[in-house]
Length: 394
Length: 234
Image 1 (spheres, each protein chain N blue to C red):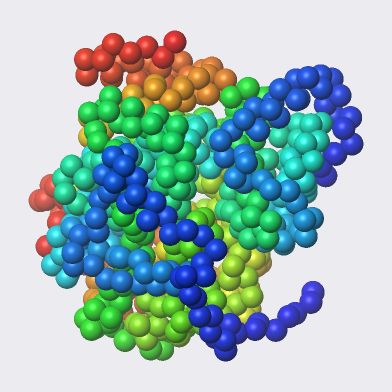
Image 2 (image 1 turned 180 degrees about the horizontal axis):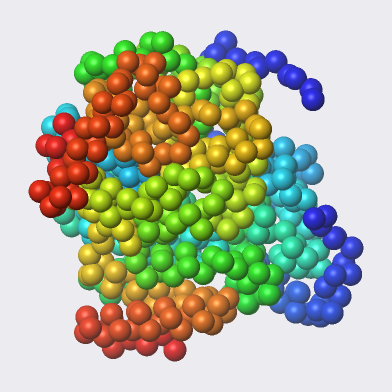
């Protein structure tokens, strides 16, 4: 095996100039189409925060009045991921909406099976956006694939008049208006933009922690110009997402040679051809992180990435691979730093790879915390309460 | 398994039929925005996770499509496109191609035309299509069964054993579900069914899996009728 040295990108800073960007600013066209009566643009509600994207443009991130577009995989299989996002909003006393008038973006299925088409995919997206608009909240997208796909849909709708007309007709038959958000915002962008406020409320010291970051493909490769970059992070040569958040929490982020690689999710593969997902995830991501950084945890920001990197390690262990690296979402780490309960809020019992050494290293008595969770479960089992509430989770 | 690019494998399929399918790809509105030729530089292959695991090359797919090699495109549409991870790492192409998007279009054509290889690639996947199309969320808590994910270890069994109560031990009220990721309103599901109806998606399902199509039609038509819609999927 050839061992190449890991070249740090931090040494050079890429200075992006929006006037020299290789693409048009899509938002100009979105607002122009509004002037022409093609649709209504949902403005980012004030107050908002501003961040820089790849080509030096500014992107608005709403602080509150957010409509939480939930993720199938997060809610279904790693529910502490979404719960942590909601917990952070509640801790800051922010106004948010957790809708039941929301479907999946259906893009996981689309990328897996192709049993859909652009008109259907765009109609699903615009139905969800219309639902957000009707209740007066702005979409905050939990899933990386939903985020990437909705950007693709927005791009297609701007440039394809026929598709726009077709989707407008469909929405009209559903009794809905054609409305498009001014920005497509991923929750991890909200976490990043809130990072200093989160750090101000930090109660768990994480300065002894080293982490690796896996950026989600559909976040920074699909319509790449919309991802957050920062001259302070990797010299603005890579997206700052997640890394910026962790550094604000005092965590050391280690670099590794396969940072750009996919996690191995594969959409179809993770469900029916996991030999690929397991092998790629363990050999190209987890083993490289351990060999080159030996971190305490790896942190990512998408449904599929948490799932694949976490669940694949069980089979890797059986094959004698270097595994045993806890995997969490940035929302979970941020919530934990602010004192969220590891089982009532982060719901770490839904994760696979052992995360107890990480919890121990940051001074959390995980055995006591588990007993507290079990006590809540016992009350539900005994019929003393129907559900665990937000108050119970404090 | 090594990819057979010898043109022999599908010699029983007429050139006209192969060309018809290729023309269907080219007729897609996205085609001219995702294929601009190919430098043959291999950057897409270097970035591609599937290329490290399978005998798979986004470069060959982009080249075959750009050269309009009808025979080779047909072979790739059958034997290669389903290996793609759809991660779009290949969007690094200096020619501004998106091999991943070319593949998306080729897959759609394969599904619409009911190619046997597409049916084979999606074997075992029908339950997922059923879930997303009928409930509006792709994966559900009750899918976490040990026999479905044996390679994820014993913790899947633990989740499965505690599923009902652990879902109730989630603070967000929308997550107390087991059959869907979250609570989805009936009205919302009806709107989703109407979208499937108006966009011809059910025809694609029929092409790929008639049994699944029949089940979905039964579920959707009943619910639509209850909601006062006179809609059939035939």
